Amino acid sequence: MQSQYTKKIIDFEALASSLNVGPTSKELSAHLDKTSVTYRDEFHIPKVGAITRNNQHPLKDEDGVYMCGNSLGLQPKRTRELLNQELDVWQEVGVDGHFDHRLGRPWAKIDDLVNESSAKIVGAKVDEVAIMNSLTVNVHFMMVPFYTPTPKKYKILMEAKAFPSDYFAIESQVKFHGYNPADAIIQLAPREGSFTLETSDILEAIEKHGDEIALVLFSGVQYYTAQYFDIPTITKAGHAKGCIVGWDLAHAAGNVHLKLHDWDVDFACWCSYKYLNSGPGGIAGAFVHEKHRNTVRPRFAGWWGNNPETTFQMNLEFDSISGARGYRCSNPSVLTVIALKASLDVFDKTDMKTLVEKSQKLTAYLEYLVDTLLPKDRVQIITCRDHLQRGCQLSLMFLKEGEMDIIFNRLHSDGIICDERRPNVLRIAPTPLYNTFADIHKVVTAIQSHFK
Image (cartoon, rainbow, N blue to C red; front, side):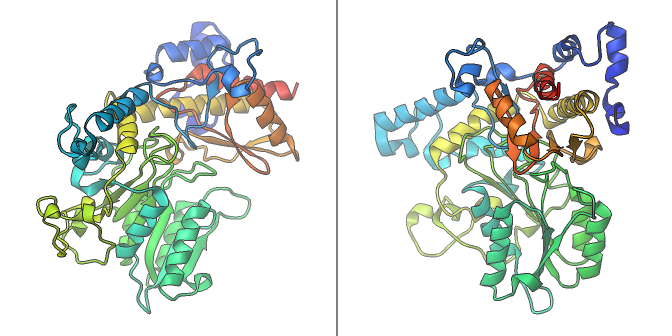
């Protein structure tokens, strides 16, 4: 049976009946693909032979199934071309490429190429966005100005099962300021028997501890369960208690619809190698709301945050760029920015509203097939059933010890890449830019074959 939330998106059984095909058939997935927008041809899809490391595989030259965009996005086809262009310019003119670039992409202003597209994806004004560093570095950089504890207001509210890197950053910042993490960090856990947090519980914690909380810092989309937190409601509640509210958008940027400016978020950080497809270790992004533009806050300053009109005067007086770019320290890597541009050029052909609509249909279809084809006493969906409270990922928990590892390895041997979180969770992430309904059908029927 479909969940009540899935029915709000699409009724697969009614659609299948109207087409005179089975609701779990390949024919239905093919129809769904024919009537959906896709940018699959813009990306390199790994082949079965490469995934399995088996050149004798009977399907070695066919596209595999890649459901791991929540960990590393696929390579856009233009990435190699754009990278080679920059290598050619470097080869031809060396340092002159910083200002005299034959393709009109001077390296001294390279991030100008991606600021506007990045701002659209996160719902920000262009001068509220800076493309710089890597994710956890940016979390630290943003906590310098935005975590300014006082003897009475020094605590940080976060989720109990945040990605470890966030906890490491928060713990080290708390210690740096001389506080005891056991006292200063409030970790909010789901209710007993649940895998996701209730928004009401978060709001209750803010109300209860708000007079002591200096910073509320959550992930926009939770990496393990794919829960999409209610960013505007939580942000508003934090502000009502005088708290700064920041967000780690590693699993949200390029995945869900964001309106950081309108939601009055203080700051946010994200990586670009997951749903933004910039490549392993790709450059990250940061958001600082324009309301903080004229606020005097401590920050780590560097040459690249200085006014470009005076930078090369080489004086020692820091003259910050207005907006988020004033938080940059070093010049961004040209090659990682260009790799990001290759992906953002694809995003520029559509918009997040369109992508999210397809994402919700893909994930609803995955949910329907799991509910219909897989045994409920062996497989449990731990992701929110409400499509408005999740990104493009479902996390499946296998209830029999050791079964997840067996299925994960079996999928890989079939040319299907997902992500496993030991001991028993498989994360499946159908991303709307390049994944198809046929991909989803292959994944679930491959898992189903394990139980036959």
